[in-house]
Image (cartoon, rainbow, N blue to C red):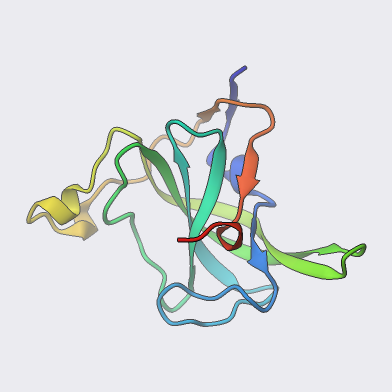
Length: 149
C-alpha cells in the first residue's frame, strides 16, 4: 500500500533521541526541549523505515545536503524540539515539532559534491514538497540512538 504525505507530516513527532543524550553532530551541544535544531533523516530505497542520522544546533546549521547518499531519500529540515514522556519507564525523548524542509535528495542522486569540483552550496534545492510516497502504513521509525553509525 502506498501513501502520499508531505515531508513535514512525515517528520512531525519523530524521535531524535533521549533527553540528555542527544547532541549536535559538529559541536557536541546538548539539546533540550524548546531548542531549534536541523535534522538529517534518510530512507534507503530497499527499506521500510526512516532513520534520523544527524542533528545540528542553530550555530552549526547546514543549509543543504552537501553529499547525497546514492540509494537513499534524504530530508534536511529545521525544527523545534519538544519532549515526549513515557511514564511507565520514566524516560523522556526529544521529538521533532513544526518541521520546515530545507533540502531533499532522491535515491538516484549520488555524492556528486564529493566526486567533482562542484561547490556544495550550489547543490540541489528543496524538491517539490507536495508529497512523498511512503511504501508502508505506518512506517517504522528508528532513531539514531537505536543503531550504530
